[in-house]
Amino acid sequence: MTVTEFQDKYPKKEEKIEAAKALSDAEIDEIIESCGNIQRKIFL
Image 1 (spheres, rainbow, N blue to C red):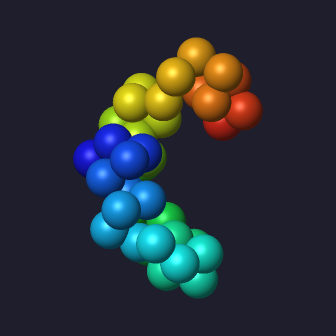
Image 2: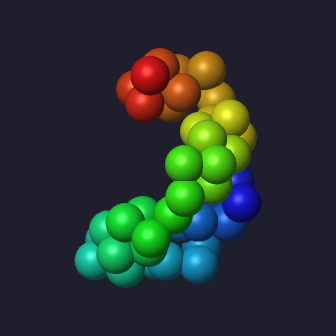
Image 3: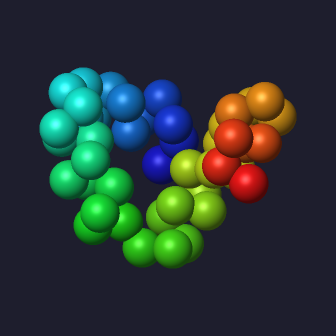
C-alpha cells in the first residue's frame, strides 16, 4: 500500500490512527518506501 492509497482508504484522522495501529512492520516499511525523499526523512 502506498501513502496515497492509505490516505484514500482512511480519509479521517481518527481512521488513520486506528489503521496505523493495526499495520505490521512490513506494511509500515512499504508505506514509508512509497514516500518521496522529504517525507521519508520525517519517518526515519
